[in-house]
Figure 1 (tube, rainbow, N blue to C red):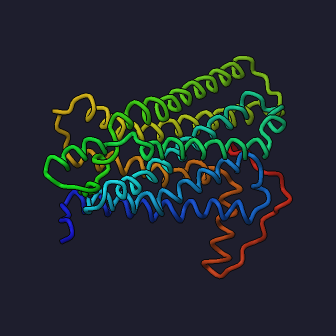
Figure 2 (figure 1 turned 90 degrees about the horizontal axis):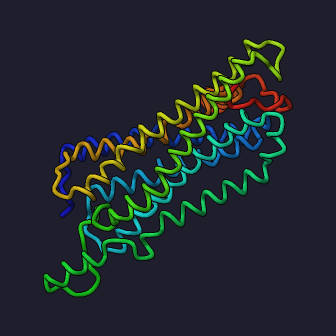
Figure 3 (figure 1 turned 60 degrees about the horizontal axis):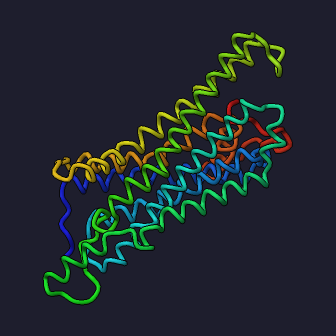
Length: 326
């Protein structure tokens, strides 16, 4: 008999599906735009594509698996663990991609004249590869033994059962809260968040310094130059806000679960925290793509060519690539 679904669960599933329906097409469109427009082929857009790939996977794989383990079908312990781990891998890759983009934008402000020699496509690919390797290491750590198998086996044997434990597959039954708090949050989520705060503080400091000097090294129009710098700062502040809004609630709830086992948390709060974290994948195309004019032009061309059957004016692929802050 399939597990019954509560009203909260049904609402949660509906919201998750909505997030996936926004996240997958939006991020596929980002990847498609980079593919068809040569003007978008530089190191910056390598990071954006990596983030988009992770976010497509969140919508296409993580969300369906999250819905599955939320329903809680009965299965073997290690089968449930294999279902839970991709969630950790892909959400971690999204976090690291966000950090890589933040660092990339910081370098644009810190060393604008040397940026293209420091951030080369080859180095960008190495950074992206490193992010994905780290994501697999972090996400697969429970498969190497940091999980709840010993506690589940103890209860399983106490009931006189033999063989591999069969459980109601839920995330918290197989994934250790010690792993989620001490390793995942305190090592792989909180430090990137704090590092991003430091990056943004440095960017604001550099802008204030430039404004106080009233000197423009790259433009004959100081107001235009300072306007660009202010736009960068606002974009970075928005990225930080969305990152914190999306990820901190879930990890705070995990900390409460670990440090206060007797504390009761309404189920709806857990659902809200989960879909906020997944919703970050749907936000990213707006934050990283729709603020870039070259992306908007390419999106319109894709829409007209493939969905409206009205060919758009050709995109000038020989034009220089726009900076993400333009």
